[in-house]
Length: 287
Image (tube, rainbow, N blue to C red; front, side):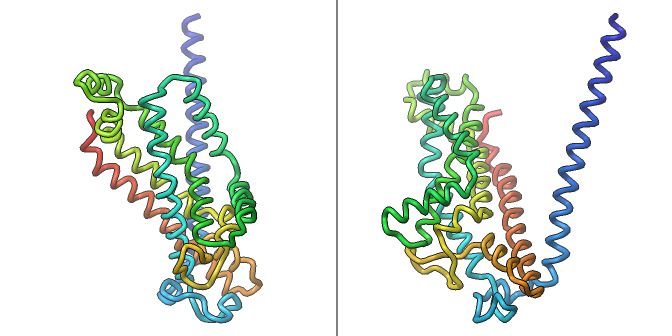
């Protein structure tokens, strides 16, 4: 009987091992195929002029110009949205940990954030567009930043919440026992202890914001110029890729893959940067 149980466990372990290896191979192959497609099709069309110039007359018909407006517009949108989301996400995550660790209210807030995380970005865009109509606003950089902040808020808050909840309980109790208030414990102990994970959560939300197209389609608009004001429209790389792929001209379609390569490199840089920063900040973590 014991031998059968051991044999059954070995069979189960073998099956799950095969499933894990298969899942890893499938994900790796998908990622490799995407990167290979973008590099092979986009690298030949990528040049310095494309990165340093804004679109000129007839750019989407195959004439001269570049995507500088979309690059800067994406950085403005994602950077502004991430900063605005951070102003609300970090205090909320700390409040959920320090003041309402186990309560119906905190569980309800986490459930609401999970639901918001799963809502398609086009719904955020439609919601922002409805608010714009009610306020008689036009598509602008400010509207795009606000909608991206709403999109990133649940992602950033839940990521921070999960990281902050990993703070050692004894460390918090030691701080409180020494006479520190809950607010002082949150800022000087919890925040410092979980700083690497918090930075990773911020960069994760930034990466989601810079690659999203649906939420800014109706709110930020699109322009061939670099935005000089919050009330002016702003271009973005995802929309630039969409518009270029929609044209029937092969040259412009190749530029779309080059723009996709630029966006991929930005996201890859953010991912590597988050790992490097987390490693540098890990010296503050009590191990």
